[in-house]
Amino acid sequence: MAAPVECAPGRPGVVVTGVGAVSPAGLGRRALWEAVRGGRVTTGPVTRFDTSRHPSDRAGEVPCDALSQLDSLVAPHRSLAARFLAAAALEAAHVARLTGGHRTGVFAGTVMATRPVLDHGITSEGLTPEGTEWAEPERLLDLMPDVVPYDGPAVQLASGCSVGGDAVALGADAIAEGEVDVAICGGAEELSQEVFAMFTTLRALAPDVPRPFDADRLGMQPAEGAGVLILESAAHCAARGAEPLAVLLAHGGAADAYHLTRPRPTGDALVRAIRTCLTDAGRSPESVDWVCAHGTGTPASDGIEARAIAAALGGPTRRKPAVSSLKGVLGHTQGAAGVLEAVVAVLALAEGHLPGNATLRRADPDCAGLDLVPPPGRPADLASVLSLAFGLGGGVSALLLGAAGSDDAA
Image (cartoon, rainbow, N blue to C red; front, side, top):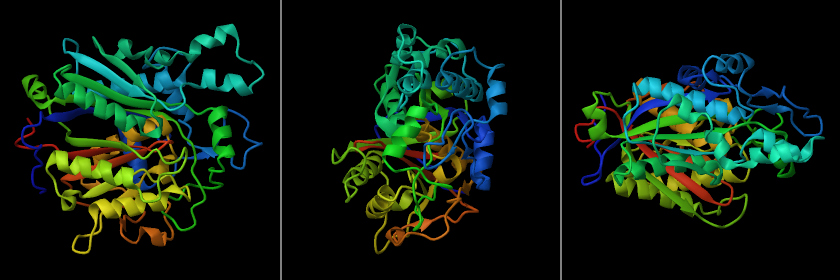
């Protein structure tokens, strides 16, 4: 068995007690895990709007049967993103056996808000007075009070595709500061014509499947969904008799402010975020058993990320860090990506299995410093994993998660 993972001395322990997911794999954490573990590509032809003017017709849609199941879980709402987030939160609360009566806050994020307001600009409807209300950012949280009781704070972030990790970090800080005992941390996104048009303009759409870290990668595919982690102080978790799924050892964030769409070629921001995690957790680079990378499959960023991970964790006398990207399976779920990938990291710790790079055929030479997990994945004795997320404009989020069962998580 892996050695128990302990939090750094002097830092309040924060544990994960619930996880929830809505993804292109379907409804729930198990559907997500089965797709990722099996390497099943869940992207496909878009069914909700016309893509004939775009170089690709593929994306990661939440399946129709999962959308139907939402009706029995959460109330109707014009925004699918709001419904995705509420459904993921409902599952996470069930897993955590969370009820009312706790000092609880909500910390959630999205990249592009919700489809109803986004698509006004490119549909025949135009931006009508009736439609302007849907631009209000807090609409994403409309359904949350109905599924998870909380008494504040309720914070919505919009920090790009790192926003899911940023939400988890903010929730953990609120616990550490004694502001809340429980933090519901999530990210959500809904596919829209506007997003498709943006990535077409950026020439970033893959024509077949995303191939993160592959020498022949051609781009990404947008996707949708929501992920939620429920965090608690270790003391609060123990007091209510709950069982932690994992320990949040540390989090790190940085921004390189280099370019709107490209990371700095040296990957300095990612290196800083990883090293911040390790320093705050009192861990060595060798202690990281797996990296759940951002890995979008775009030609510009994957090589930079690979070199940065190798610089932060590798070295002549160290083993190569084991690395996978989930975007070959799920596509890029944007605002949901950071949390969905953290959910998978928690499940990987519990299951003792490293998901593979499902669509990898020929590794990019720039990834020579990494142990890219092959498509089938492999069993592993995991004690700690690192989950990474990037955002346009240079934002980076890193979460260091440890196996449950620590003797000193408090």
